[in-house]
Length: 463
Image (cartoon, rainbow, N blue to C red; front, side, top):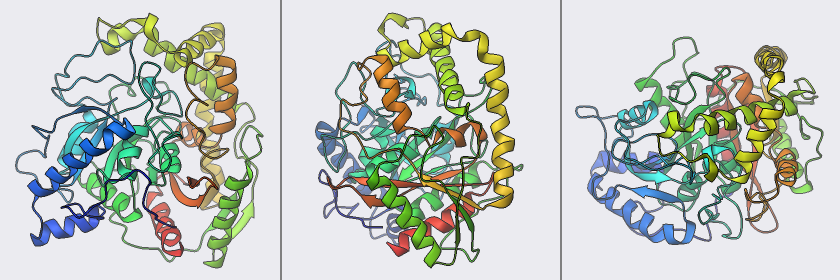
């Protein structure tokens, strides 16, 4: 994996330097740099970058939010950011929507509490598309978040603000969450490592708890596998789900040689573009050189899955729009939701009677997924159906039918792991002719994040 400097970046000779979180942690431990110096350097970088990237929606530079008193986790003093669909006390949560009347949050959200308990220093909140529904961070009411590798291109979504600031060097890691690809998609677009954990690995957010199928997982985007591994090791100390195998602190490649199922084309039958396919095939070849066994496989899911997931997506919009006053406050104005949210809402209304059967089929994906991983250790595929689009291609003002066609061709691999609840890793494994990263997707059986991180180390070292 190559690691060139982003075209918009803040890497410089300050307290952060070029370090990832692991290197920064070691310097903090040795005392060669102070937490205060690191925090100041991150704030200066955020101030430098945001006018160019438009990735921050709120900052708390004068009063950074730090770890719980008395706790000194492995990530203590590491600067970070929180995605703006998670409450942080004293700062409004806007969820990327003009429909929400912002009011300061009264309490920290469930995941913000875990984040702070890990020792991270929070300096602000990052941009997302409305309610996290789109695969690009281009709010209809605001300027788009721009990709540090080329500002004319998308950062992906929905955790695009976090991905932009990590890729550009403002912070080593930032919060991201994933209800259909929203950790892995921006990681792929911005050349980062993005691990979507197994369902239930971390605290479940307040908005995800009432869902008939919890498709949302929490995590981070980082620049290195070892940072992602360190984060998940620390979070496991903060909150351990005893129903899942422990991850532990993964610090290098493993010994296991895997049986890898190769799926270069999507569940919905859309052909993958040439550059993306080449990155996946090159990754398969590298794994084969490392002793893993590669076998072509068919999509391990019902043909109805793409349409069923769109309907579930529509249900989420229906709940956000019709229940907005309860979820987001009395000032919620449904007339202000963007074109994508409105189109999804209307789709759901037309097909509401189909929901029970759709829920039944989507719940079945968990057992189908588990059966696949009885025979295979890894499912290797693209993260996305084609390379990162220019800004505007997926803008919510694009006519709904056209936008859905484009999203269906683009986001055709990641949602399966959300409904099935399995873990998946996005790794930067290629480049477009325009100099943009290409992500490759590795999925594993429930609870097998350790295996994914071990393979991530292998691929990172091979690059």
